[in-house]
Image (cartoon, rainbow, N blue to C red):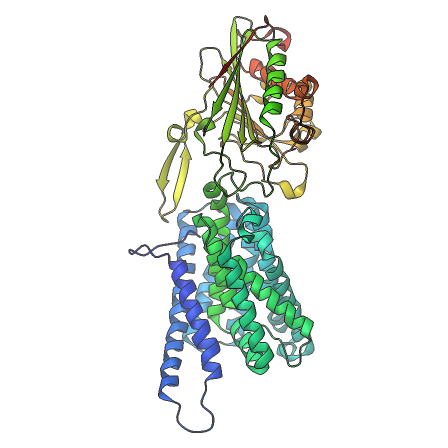
Length: 607
């Protein structure tokens, strides 16, 4: 759910967060603590606060209904990236939630009406939690959305059992209290681990920021002061405000855990709201709405605000990588390599390439270089002090012509950040298109920026290597979009290792059984092949890919020496890519026996 805006540029989800915070303070906290004592008339200022609280309650409820209806209309117009059964599941659950919610807001709800409303809410939560796995987005954020869904679904056990088999007395028995406590502790656990799912990356940099730490400290200190000096007041505030039942005489360790969870969630929300990217800020807004809704579920506003928060989180997940790009893909700094050691290694690589190529040149570029027109890869949130790109170019002879080979290795502050190898027919272009040429930006009906790739610049075939570990899924940047479907080859081991998209029936032509076996052993990252014969390989070491293959980063960084043997890994990968690119050439231009051949020569050119 992209954040809609007013004419003044105010995001309506941000407005809902502010209004819900006011409603929480006035309606669920202040009016419960400042009620007049006895049968006398209420104080005038308390009456004014009560009226303001009532207004904020209905205003927030109406605004939340409007945002949920807007999400429903977007689903009908297909202005989002939900697909198939998930689209219609969300539409049906949203329709049920809005209709039942409107009835419950405007009239006294019956038990059956409340059950229908809660059913629509739980169905919507389930569909969002499961359907977002079919959409792009970071794995950690998807797990966090599932974590939010769990405590939201648990309380539904009581109404479900009351309507279907146990009767309404189950709502007031010990079982209902047990279910509520299970959901409450699930909420506390989610709050404690929320930074790992939602906080800006890298987490180490986010933890060093002052504002989130100060906000979390204030929340913890104020909560501790209230519980130590006014325990009953704190108990009522937790119950009416956040739906957390502390209970009288709670053990000190439980109170400490509650305060730690509240402070941690406050830190996560503040860190996200203050992030650079709009998608990360929307994550903070979604989390804030989730927290402000509370766990009491006594009023429709709490369900509706929680729904808007969940939709906001799900939508922000799809935009996060687009806006933050590759700069936060790794959460740890890669080791820098000394210049002398690195230049010796590059020379070894060039020497190995020169054995099978006509001309090899080394070009060293200092300063920022945007390979392929894309934004510079950053290994941390700070700006890099030095960027260096080593470029090895070679002319590889094939029958009837030559292949132009270009190998780029980008280093940021001495650490290897990207390896790119491009093969193209001699006379063609090996340079990747700039984003200005390859994509067109447009604004959809929801006011959200969309990027459309132009057909001439889209690869006809892509190969993406899955990370070896589950938690690495999606960590390595994806290849450019290919219009072809995901296809399988008759090779189970290869299919488990790679995701293959083919828009031109190129798989059998580019990869035979021998090349598939070599690719399984050598390739990480991704390979793309374009219709004009251009092949591009890209790898970001340590980002969902091995750190030491094909470039032995650890050996070069810590042993302080490289050898021609260590350069063999990269040279072997180059040979594989040349063989694949050769098979993609027109039938009258191919390398004999699939091997690079030619005289040996090498020159150096440094800038």
